[in-house]
Image (cartoon, rainbow, N blue to C red; front, side, top):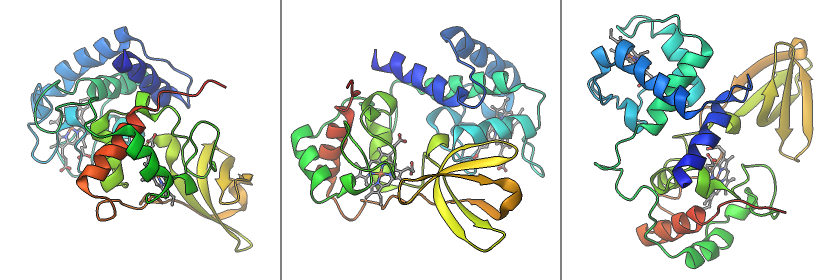
Length: 256
Ligand code: HEC
Ligand code: HEC
């Protein structure tokens, strides 16, 4: 059930710019495309190119689904990873397949959605020591600087939530990217990228104001490589991390 919902949300996230949506049939289509075009090099389980495990989300270069799609379409110049003529929908279907094909068991995948910790303790850590609420919003409380976590338990499995806490730069979703812009008059604006098209960029700045910029007025426009989120690797003990993850897993959506 959680898995089905996660699939839908994944599909929605992938589809955001073009309003595509992916069904189970698309994911199966992605699986067939993978077996015919990719498995020859990457192997049926995505682990034959050293250092890359496509089915487990372990990449050397790609940091999000949009980049994986771009790599599928353009290849990686100077390497044997070839370009392809796949459409956005086909590349998206392959990514949807890769993201859902993770083996049910195996290293790092045990207990994907089973959290070991104590959710109530996790909530106290979220509010207290972790200071998560200074950036995040849950069930209508907190700022909008960082993603709303009200339904994060349906979007990400426990293993990913834990990884996010110790290594925030990993697994940044396309909708959660931050950009630095400098206008031609020298003003610097940083914020969370909400949308962009050929001519304009919309950001949510640090005062939670929606800023719309004209690309022709910009001197620089760069994606921030690292996540603004601090790592909790040394700030929380292993047990405390389990508790925070248990709390996050319990967040299954806010219905006002
Ligand atoms: C001819 C062999 C070959 C084929 C076919 C191939 N790949 Fe690759 N792929 C590679 C190699 C080799 C690399 C590593 C390149 C490097 O970084 O040196 C790679 C890298 C990648 C990466 C980047 C991973 C990272 O670490 O960021 C992705 C994603 C990827 N391939 C997906 C695919 C998909 C999906 C297909 C099928 C549409 C595919 N590849 C087909 C050989 C191949
Ligand atoms: C300084 C601000 C800040 C603090 C403090 C912070 N975060 Fe974050 N967090 C972010 C930002 C910004 C992102 C979005 C970028 C990214 O994915 O790395 C994020 C992303 C996340 C994500 C991934 C959301 C998704 O849907 O992909 C989770 C989960 C998360 N934070 C949980 C926490 C928890 C739990 C704490 C406290 C232990 C915390 N964060 C503290 C800023 C913060």
